[in-house]
Length: 552
View 1 (cartoon, helix red, strand yellow):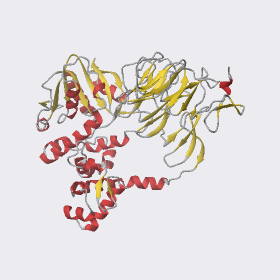
View 2 (cartoon, rainbow, N blue to C red):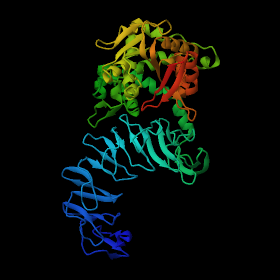
View 3 (tube, rainbow, N blue to C red):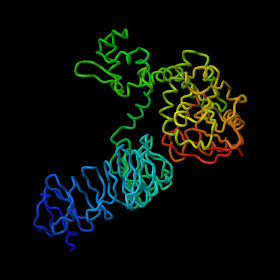
């Protein structure tokens, strides 16, 4: 009986129709569409089951909810949880989940009681050991999986990473491309996870016959081809480019406002009324009101109906006691670092530009040294925590974090691998400030012979602070510090050829440290100068990537 293939849900959603006529006499509280092998989910009162095209139950069991059959299996909800059944009502497997999807490409995504996602096969067995923050359906053997940090990648039918690249948001492949979003915006990527073009957009649709509709950041709608070129403009820009550029020109307003709020103690004075803030910070009430309004525009404070102001989740990071405080960063960026930025034209004109040694400057000032390393300790968990477990340490027993400051990354490593001996090499003034109970510090100079050897040398955002000559010297010391069979792991932003991301950071390094951001080829050449061979670059869920190098 194939009438179910032509059946449509009646407007009342209580039964099905074929050619406008009822398919059967029964009525239910709700019905869903028929799926092969000719069964429809129905609900009546608190019970749910499946019916055939005659309106008869397909089996005797009853559930709390039932869904359509896909690949001969239907998701159902019972008192014990979510699971799948066969057309005769038999259980596909004994496990129970907090949610189940539908089978696609021989796989089905499920969520366990801990809120983690994975895929099961046709028999209900887990396909792989990993558990994801989120996972989607398979299409053509590839699905999207989201890591703990919220970034997403593609996995194959066995759960292996397809390309190892991570994005803020991601879709499955369609016509050879997947929609993807990175820190700069939306674009399309190929099956290697590589951007198809350099442009970024506020929104992109999948490609259809080689073209896709996109929305630009200025509100314009366009149709682009697979190389990102504009085919036609569907809507003119909604935002003035003059206004957008003007906003960039006054970006320092934000920096100075946030720094003033920290220096004046306004953040620590909240919550409170404008009068409270004025009294606590020694400000005229009018000035306190004007500053709070500006902080509100920046999303760091908000006012309540009773006249009291308080910090937002963003503003909480400006509190000195916050575990990820940016209070020190606000003062540093508005003060010493901003003064260095004023030298940008001079730095760009000179091929031999070299600023004063910022690290020696910081180390010589006890107060600034403490503030500077508090700032670095705030950034480290944010930047390194998502990638620590991906570091290819192998059977290493001793890891040296060269230029590791006061040990923020080393501490994360010790928490993950308690069997490791993790050492931190830095200037004597710096290692002296490693917190009690922290990793062991080794006083030394990156440019002098290192007084220690290790199985793995970590250089986490160290090389980008130096020009090629000095970076090669550091790498040569790293090579000499390796035990037999050891490796060097470089954690850095790797500039891409298909987008402009990292350009402003590159200029920041130029004026502050004299260093630079680098491409993969740049790193390969730099490592070769020090007698090291770049074996691979591992993508991570965080901004830095892991460059793995071995002695030649």
